[in-house]
Length: 290
Image (cartoon, helix red, strand yellow):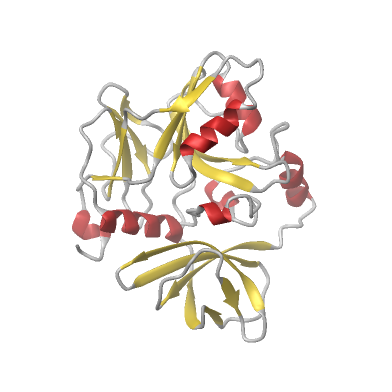
């Protein structure tokens, strides 16, 4: 398998592990707005955004792309969290809201290292009958996601690994289970993706998020490192004399090993190591904000 996305240009492959949750009913958008950390009411129909669900202490349970098909139909494209468990947890907060929550197991989720045919930025392309498109492109990386009834695209683990690395390069944390409920949105630099709101009303964790923002207490954020060896999430990033931070997400393909780590925003040390290997910090790419 080639070591670069350009060699895969235009080839569809199954985005293994990614799942879809549907919220349907009269109160779908209102329920999503009250539970999730971004502005769902202000999102136009036919558009999508980065979003997430927090603990009451403001820690990220799961990150996802939220698609607003209509006020009564919201889809969550979940890349890493256990979608079935997430759906069951959300059901506990429905109470009297008119919304049904469940997995969309009859739809196929595929990726391409190519610009979408009709989607642009946050505008969803296509239609449900033939397939919906999301634009995940940036200046450095044309990418698109298609959600459709089938048939399923081929499995391609190498392409999925490259996809995860592209996410990390753009500052989208791919959080494994061990990193759920560990980090605030600010610590994961999710402002870069416009993934949370500090102005909307009450939602779980909102007080912590707003206080951190308005009191200027965000002291840590993401840094991207390249390592000569594979890195596990949870590994320590060490400076010359002390631990600097922790790896929140990692992805490997061939000889390329990337890690997103939560580190102090202000630090004097430039040398860093992970698991005894010297690592090189590299700038995060822009262009994935929606």
